[in-house]
Image 1: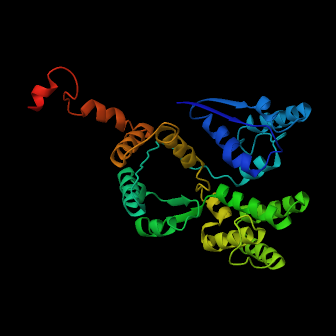
Image 2 (image 1 turned 90 degrees about the vertical axis):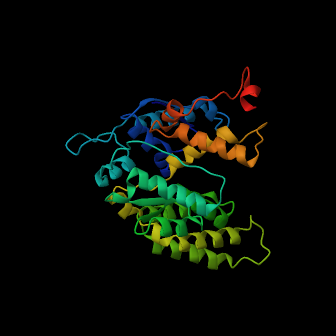
Image 3 (image 1 turned 30 degrees about the vertical axis):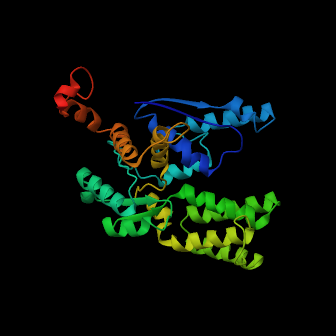
Length: 317
C-alpha cells in the first residue's frame, strides 16, 4: 500500500501532532511505501513569518525522521517526548489487516454488525482486548453488551480537544494562563492522574460559577461544566499510563481517517440518496475499504446475470 500524508508547520510541536500524525508516520514507514511531506507553503496562510516556518519545518523533519531506537543505540538528538515514549514502549502486535462495517441503521443493529465482525476476526480469543471510543453516551452500553470484560479506552485526541476548549474558556483572552492550564491538565491525563484532572476542573468551575439554565453553548461556564461531566462519565476509561504499558491503542485516529473515506463516497455536493441506495453504497464501500479482499472475492463469485443490454425485456417476460 502507498500512504501519502502531510503536516502543516504552523505552530510549535505538541502532543496532538505527535499522537495524531508523527507517531503513525514513524510506524507506517516500516509497513508500507510512504510519502510524507511538510506543507510549509500552506503554513504561510496562518504564519506570516517565513523564517519561523522554516524553523518549524526543520524541527518536524528532525522528529519525524528518527526511528525508535533500541536502548543500546545512541539517543542523541531525540526530542524528550520520543525518548520518554521509547523508554516505556511495549511493542504492540503489528496490524495484520483492517476491515470495516457501516450502516445507516441505529446503534443496536450496528452493534450486532461490529460484534459479528469481531467474532469472524477471532478478536474474542485475543489475550488483550480493547474498545476505543470518543466518549459518546451510546458507546459504553454497546461495549458492555457486546464486549463484556474488554478494556474501554477514551480516545485521547477527543479528550485533548475538550481540555483545550475548557482551558481557553476558563481564561478568556489570557492566552498564557490558558495554555498553562491546558498543559497541566494534559500532563495529568497523559499520566492517568484522573483525580487530579477532575479536581483541577472542579476548581475552575467553582471560580467561574455554575452556568445558568439558559446559558449559550459559547458560555465559558457551560463549556467548563460540560468538560467536567465528560471527564466524570469517562473516568474509568482514562488510565492511559496503564493502557500504554499494556500496548493498547489510546486513539481512534485510524478509525477517524476511515470515516473520512466513507464520507468521501456518500457525502458532498450533488450526492443524493434514498435509504436503500445509500445502505447498499455503504456496504460496497465497507467491502472496498476492507483489506481482506472481500470485495474482490464477491465480484469473482457473484452470479452473473444480464441487467442491461439487448433482449433484457425478453428475459424478463
